[in-house]
Image 1 (cartoon, chains in turn green, blue):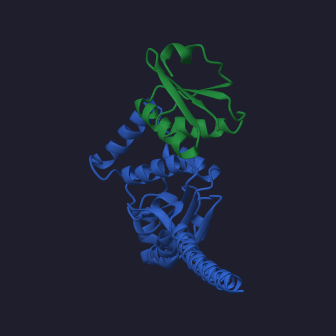
Image 2 (cartoon, one colour):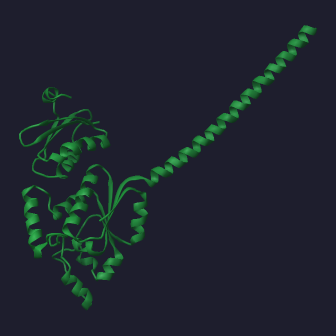
Image 3 (cartoon, one colour):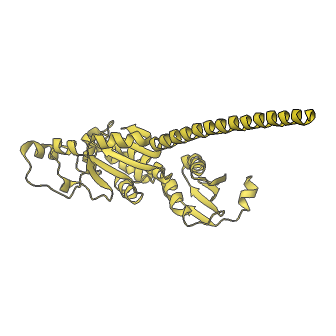
Length: 83
Length: 208
C-alpha cells in the first residue's frame, strides 16, 4: 500500500510499543493480535529501527498480511492485516 | 454366418484388449497409490523431526551471552516457536535466587556458592567487565534504551511458556540445591539426553 492509502486506512487497534526496544515490540504485537478480529487492521508504533524489518517477517510466519510502514519523526507506524 | 463369426471374433478381440488395458491401468494406479503412501510416511517423519522449535544449550554464565539467549528466545516465542532452553554449567548462576539459601553443603560446594554470581542481576560481562563497572554501565544503558532487564526477560519468558531445563549433573557438580533456584513456572531438571532428544526435533539449535 502507498503512504496515502495507509494514512486513510481504518485501524482497529493501535499498539504503542515505543517504550520498549527489541524484542519488546514483537511481544506487544503478539499480545495484541489476539484481541483483533480476522481481517481487521492493526498498527504497531515502534521507535526501534529493527522492528520495521522484523514485523514483516513475523507477519509472513504467522500468516498476517503486512501492509506497509509510515515513518514519523522518531518512530515508525507499521500496518498489518490479521489473517 | 461367416460375417457373424468374424464379427464375434472382433468383439472378443476388442473386449480382451479392453480388459487387459483396464487391468494395466489398475496395477499402475495401485503402484502410484503405494508410492504416494510411502511419500506421505516420509513427510510425516520429516515434519516430526523438524518441529517449529528452538533449542538452546546455554553453558556460559556471562551476562551478555545470557542476554543474547533470552532475547532470541523471546523473539522466537513471539513468533509462536516453541522454545526449550537447557541451562548447564556456568549458566546455572543466572538461575540462582539471590534471596534463597541452602543448608547442609560441604566446603567445596559452599566455596562455589560464594564465588559464583548469585542470580541474573549479578552476572559478569565476558568483555569489559572492569571489576563490576561494566555490568553497571550496561544495565544503565539498557534501561536508557528501554531494553528489558534480565529479570524482566525471565518473567516474560515464563508468561510465554518458554521451557527451562536445568542440567542435573551441573547442579551436583557445583553443589547447588533445587531450593536455591528461582521460582520459574516451566522449570524442570534433566540430563543431556533430554536436550539431545529435544534438539533433534527442533528446526533451530544453538549453543551459547
